[in-house]
Image (cartoon, rainbow, N blue to C red; front, top):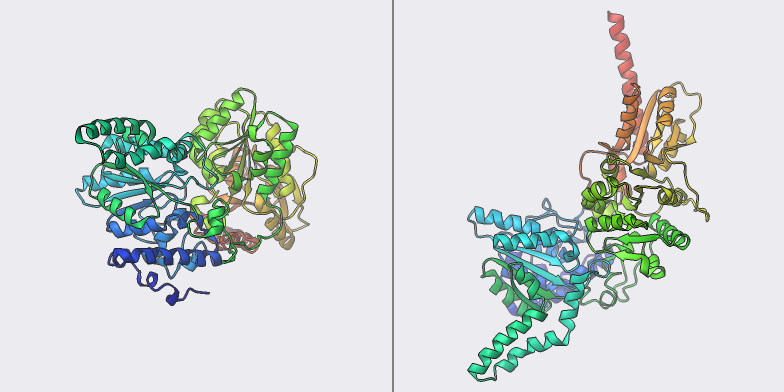
Length: 639
């Protein structure tokens, strides 16, 4: 049901930020109330990221009210906190399509709006991008203001500090806003987060802040002396110290929900020059009691009841994340050397139960993927067995560490790689479409992809026993429903298995399926009477199986939920080339383009990687082979 205009009389007048800037300041409180109510209502119907945006309502209004967007650049970190920004920048009428096929993206997207100055789905990038824009503006002698908005969770990422350090050194004309809500996705960890929380809640900080009122009553000579003493003491306890030492003019912290204070402060800081840092304190989930009470759960939501906040039940059935979670706890009970590591994705990666049962062996390192791998390498050097639970899309950020710190030293680290392949509504920024390619070329890696839940558990155990780096990559969501065995069972490394053998066809087809593609390929195999092989291992590849299938079948087909270039099909092609096999091969996988968001079935259907699409691609290839053969016969007859 679409929202009615009468419920949002002021919000429905705002089609662009230019119209917002025509409002009187006294109207902005009403706009904030309507915007918050609108965001809650729509998200209750569509699902999406709720709590982050509820915390940035006033900040978003303040930024567009004070700055001349889109001429002035707003660079939001990640995009979870930018739902209000989307609503106020001409996308209110389309907001009910967010994260849906052909609808609005859940993240910032440059092609979607001129107000989305930088697209991002990964954390800690905003300051670097904004700094680049600020330097470009200076070189062009333009007058655009540049603002980066980053959460305290993203400040656990080292890239943010690299950018801050560089910005201070360059003396760039840049405003950085720290949206401090003490949360990222999982509860924040790390010294910086703890420091901010401790300072803002401490008695010493409160005393120093209140000292200005006391100083105003003193005689001038005493006041001047006391002010110098105050500044000295303030530097010892306030969070300004860190950022001012990096070259920023620090202001704050201020209440991020007080519109009058925000707008006045933003206006003042807009008129300043050089590196500026505004620290605001907000509440994640502000204005919706269930989200305030549990901002972690309401970070990303399914449709929910507006009155109670109760969400729709998700589909029953075990997910691959559940399989990993149970295996990890079972394995930890058997081996006290096991250490679980995650870069800020405790809930998403399935480490909640492990963190509760084995808190001394659980490490959330924050949004610091590079650090997570080298930290694991250090643990492995001392004889422990680290298991790094990480999304495929986030492992990309630690590629140097994978090669330099783990592979070269042949260290014993297991990677549990979640969200491999297409990820649905999160779209191209989170697609796990590249891990075969970037891991396959790393010496010493063992790479596995399970066809079902039972095989996933077996592969995790196989990788754990392997002496050296090993990876198990599995998709978002559930599998075909194959129950796991209670016992631990290791697989023979580098060995595929035949799932279906073709009959006495004149032109038999062999389908080499990897991971999630095994079951749709079995459906195709039954329809076409084709051989179907569950390849299991991307590296080491089962060369014997590949060559046997090439020698006994008229067409070899590889199918993978991964980009074609550099993937598992490329590994098969290389194997054939090494052994001088030159028969026809069809590589089916994700094409050479970024796929927009939508449900996983919609994405697979779009690129002909559902069962119907795979079947059609094979039929088209067979037809092309037949036509090619006819043409050769005609040419021979003509000669």
